[in-house]
Image 1 (cartoon, rainbow, N blue to C red):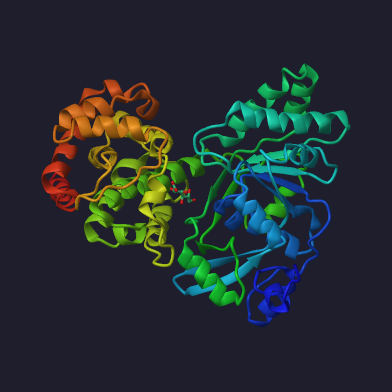
Image 2 (spheres, helix red, strand yellow; image 1 turned 30 degrees about the vertical axis):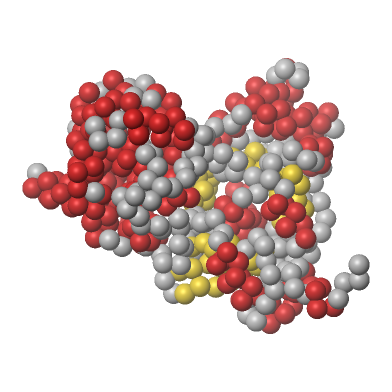
Length: 478
Ligand code: CS2
């Protein structure tokens, strides 16, 4: 089929870059070919709006080692859309001062692991590759991933190449150590020598990555088309804030300074940052996601701008979670978070955040509940959050509208919630004792379960908003 000239310029691609630059949109001006230095697994929105833009900054400064092979694990759609666009995509960065589009250029190649596993293995074993980064899960790593990486590392080892920096950027506590265990365990059955080499020559820094990147909506794609003058199927919106805190543990120690110069924080211990992020940011997000879904507030910005929700989240962070943290200036981080949540440009859907809650809650709430209980801190707001989740899994909001729950345990959870609807104590007995979610200790803690039942009963009788107001009044009096 002959391509009409008009069609040639309807899609973002390298031919558009001069015109975009002329419109004042920052675009990559570096050469975008050659063998990538980074293999990234998990080509989601988060990577493209976070690490890939850090690598873009480094490339823009002339360091050619940070081009990325972006690997989607299963889904072909995004990888193929990016390939059609030569790996280019636009990001709308919105701060209080306004919003600015930019075009990211760090993704030089794409692949789909389930479709082109050999390409991924070869890339891990390529002489140019120095880093492997991952954003694949919030729930922990599976053996299939280990086998894929181990195959690449085996080829690398056999070729006598140096080890890699293997940086997990997943929202998991001790993510580097978890990845290390996965890779070493997957390497051992292949050969003990390989397992030793992985342990000795590859570096597995823990890291904490933070930037709020909502899934793209049709509105965002339309805004991109408007701003760029061409369509971009991979466009995204995000906030101006970003943080990447990484442990000083690199296969090439010189990378510490290189990353630091691009704004990355290199530290000896990531745990205080990781903890603060999972518990303050993600913990609050999941609480608002459940409250918002039940009350019918569709986005986080709409939740947090209501005084009752804001003082609830502020109190949760200030009185129950924050005092347990050792991140320097956690109160400053809290204030920044309250402003970030309120960013009106993000339109971050509560249902998106509530996705897979049964797998996210274990990292986000129980450590705070247990810590607060043993430190003698209050847990009423955490109990309210837990109760809101129990009401959320019933699958319909306070206006009677049913919603779909996107969670591997959705069927089981909804059945339990519906069976016991209206009986708070029985609901908590059924939903609050699931050890896969709450861990070993909380299901046996009768004081905790009673507090959750009290809040759930309140939500059932009064509705989320009035229940929050009553809780606040009670806590103010205490
Ligand atoms: C959110 C996170 O979707 C979710 O569960 O809590 O993805 C959050 O936006 C990021 O962790 C921010 O860094």
